[in-house]
Length: 219
Image (cartoon, rainbow, N blue to C red; front, top):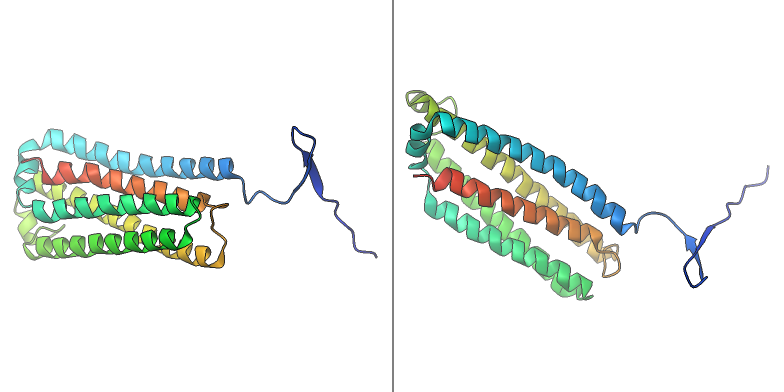
């Protein structure tokens, strides 16, 4: 039986020029739409947690204010600045790649990864300080405090932990992108993956911009 041959699909532009349809890998609009749908699910997850926080804050305002006094505003402020700078460098990596400056784009991605790692290190040390003081779920010290204080720290560890997971995922994606750039699979002609990653990183930063004041600045 002879092998079947597949005729290429041809489309014509407004000038009547023929173009072969290869695949949908370069479907920029589809890639953006798909990512926005994904981002919408992320917004729903964090919005739900923020609503839970708002409800319990209303019911336990004094306890939440008391618990917030134990937050390290200096470390939280430094992390806010670190994440802000990383958002800038991530955006610059996209601009550089669009301008076909691959070397500069790669450099900015590495800088973003470094700042993201610094964020995680600071957050880890902050967690260790809080745990060392007994402010962690199910600790005997925390159980001896008011119910609102326990709710505060439960939400704090949940939100900052989930946010930290998103930071780790972002670092993993950026490392994967660096490999793709090296292979030439992401370039000035095909940059939607990097652009979507920068959008994801913007979202991660926005989440922290909300997390920081509701836990660190309410007293």
